[in-house]
Image 1 (cartoon, rainbow, N blue to C red):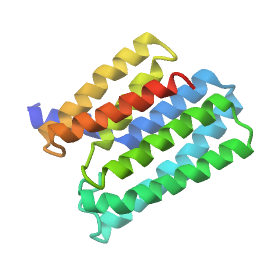
Image 2 (image 1 turned 90 degrees about the horizontal axis):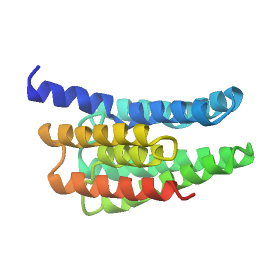
Image 3 (image 1 turned 120 degrees about the vertical axis):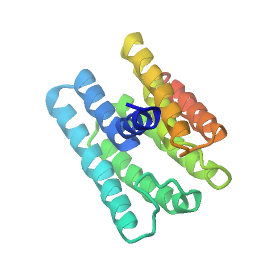
Amino acid sequence: MNTLSLAKWISIIGHPLLLGSIYVVFVSFYRMERPAAILVSGLVIGLVVVPITLHNWRKVKNGKYGNFDVSDQQQRKNFYPFALILFVVLLLLFYFLQLPSELIMTSLVFFFLLLIMGIVNLKLKASLHAAIAFFISLSLFALSIGFGLALLVFAIAISWSRLVKRSHSLQELVVGGFLGAAFGGISLWV
């Protein structure tokens, strides 16, 4: 397998929707009783992952997005408000369903990461792949140093893959990775 093919596979596996879904399911079942874990996983996948997947797919099909990753900075200006609205709905449901405060606070920290990424996007197309991968890696340190380190290595690999694919500049990756790590670190304290 050549370098570009490897980078493409790492980028696919590290896609925020896939990596984020795996993270939510894993952490939910690790920290909660099975019924609560099923509820949380279902809400995140049903209210965030599926709508974003359908939204991006439809926008690509209609020619409004150049690709599923929404790699164009101008196109991302329409993506962030949609994603943020979905997270507001999710957060409200978590609150009204009286789910654990730790879940609500971590989700709120993630919401603010997305909000800041949307604001940064007005000037720079910071890497959402890197931001989410580093957020997840830092937040996993709360469960296990081993999980955190494994995902930290994978976050670096994801960033490398985005650079090799020329999806992002080094500056965009550093900013995304820094913001993800910073908010992931904050999630350790909530």
